Length: 408
Image 1 (spheres, rainbow, N blue to C red):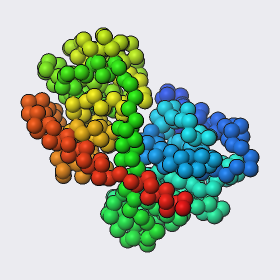
Image 2: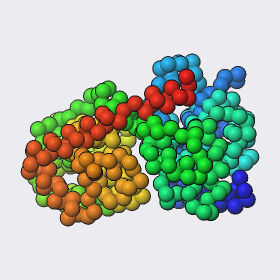
Image 3: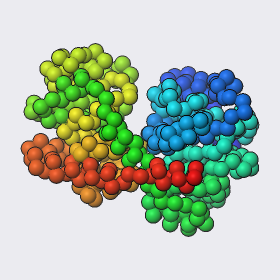
Image 4: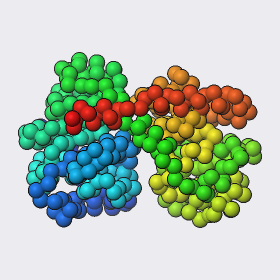
């Protein structure tokens, strides 16, 4: 890549190092990357080829996971190298059993890129959704390693489609094939001369269907929600909670499950202080105690996606920030889903809004109106939840399509 790109990566690396002095996530990233080559030296088996799958964070891991599982199911002897960029993905998934080696991806600097690819004999490289690292892509192409991106989606506002985006368009030409979610992405890529593209859909649909079909016992949540209208607020942020909690406080006919995106002690304590009805923490309660509470705070990672099956309706957070979190995890259970206004980057959100299986709320007043409707009209609740569930069912199959084109 050119001087400007490499300078930008170096500045980003320096910013993370400075931030790590105060910020826990930055510190985890810095320390994790420092261990990467030690992990590779220790765990990569000499003489073995690896399928390398790279994800940014937890959401992208959930998109890549169905493909890993299909690879392992069909070819158990294949070795999988799984890399993360973000601590919020790595820290949750570092013990994922189907990956043979799991580590952080070093920053996209030429020397680190060469050292990384020298340390692993990569058979195929697969990036998920938005991962575009110019030096990695160019070095993979130079080494003739087949490289793919899956579940990707492109928008006109991205730099690839700007007059000054030539350097970034070169990245797109490094992929042997791009698997995208929709026709708009195909058309945009074609407009810049990239035609090795297939509409395969989004592998997250397959992932949430797998979760639906493989239930695990969650007695605390089941006991808490039994017989009540229960709103699940998943991956919530403070702007979401500013209207969810007051509504809950004033509606004794409902219960609330809060699964905040950040789980620091101070964050959870601040939530508890705002709740005016009996509240318990998931890690500190029992099924018997939970049944008597009105609010349950899920203060641990790893169970939210399986918990939605006990929800009457769901609110998915992030829509008042950079963008909503995974709404498919809730919609698969056939319940209506609410979220904030920043959803336009997500095809599933746009689709579900058109179908009325999901609803965007621009502020607290809109949230209150929609919740009153869901609380008081059982037929309306069931009708729109059914729409959400059917939408997920209609969009299954991306993983198999991708697998067949890459590995057969």
